[in-house]
Length: 452
Ligand code: AMP
Image (cartoon, rainbow, N blue to C red; front, top):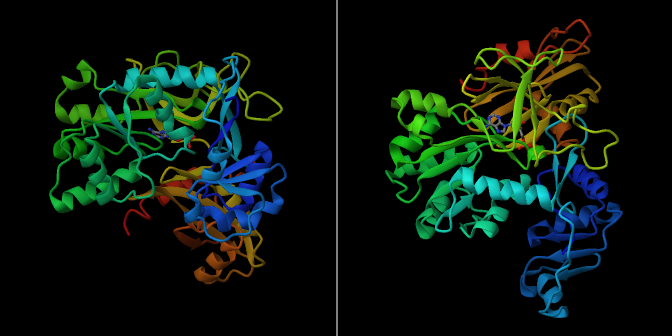
């Protein structure tokens, strides 16, 4: 219809939501009734908002103080059932997602009809979806529009199964059984719960033959569990909001399937091969391309028809003179073209598929009157992939009660941002330019949350 669909992540703090809604200049807000209190609290700060549509039947809408709100039913009643679709140029904007995968405020990535459709056509082929597939994305729409899968379902005619709010192992298993789902998609954290439930009950998913995992690295144990217990192949993919999202994928090739089992699992832990149309390279600190020898690692750069050039409303382009976008990931490319992520250069922590800005958390801690220096690093966590640790130097040299710090932080950040542990130190490692050397701390504390 020519409007731009902006899918919003409700887990942001109210202040961040206000920033994003105003930055996007959103005019119409469509919400579930559960979000009425949240919107009531911020609606006066939303500068462009004209209408709120509550996506529920009239009878399911509680009393509220929303300005200019109507139910979805009301909206439909007022409209004719005929609609003249406009003719739009393929470069017209179609959707907008914000990402915190960089420093500073969340940034907007604006997709066009062209980029979205090219990506949606391509992923169906690479993921092996066809009209008889039933695909269950356990990925929110605000995470790159559920990885583009809903668009792909429309184009390719496969069945799209949506989980709603119930993401626990039992509910997911029942949905898989009921709809004979053959492909699952989601971040690793989601599958831990499902695998645990199935193992505990001695159940097997008979219909599923593929599980597409991305957003964070797929662990070896998960690849093995899906194969051994469910005869399901874990297809490991890598991408970003800025890439619509898919960039590389590690599919079930003849070559992979002919490897001895353990070797194949090892191969599956890598992020895979670039999709048709996507180019990748790794570069050193001088932007010189590195050899594809499976050893040299450097900044991973990408280019392609569904990869962003400029963040929404940003002044300059996000790509270099030759059009390469620096992903902020550090990778190795193997001689056969397989890409493997080895580290992340961005100063952000990815927990259960969502970002925490270490800088924002440090700044929040630094407003405490007795804190001299603060440093936040992400360390491995058995359930959430990564969780934040907060290192503190106090002004008086004494420790502060951890609960007091958490209560203080809660005034500034949302609860799931709170550090999993707070560690008091006498000094923090600094580089030549005065920057905190987080790599050293990450290495030293990499087992800290795994042992608990
Ligand atoms: P987002 O834009 O929130 O989807 O985050 C994109 C970032 O998630 C990437 O730049 C990586 O840092 C990380 N990521 C995505 N997929 C993978 C993967 N398969 N392995 C490791 N990191 C990943």
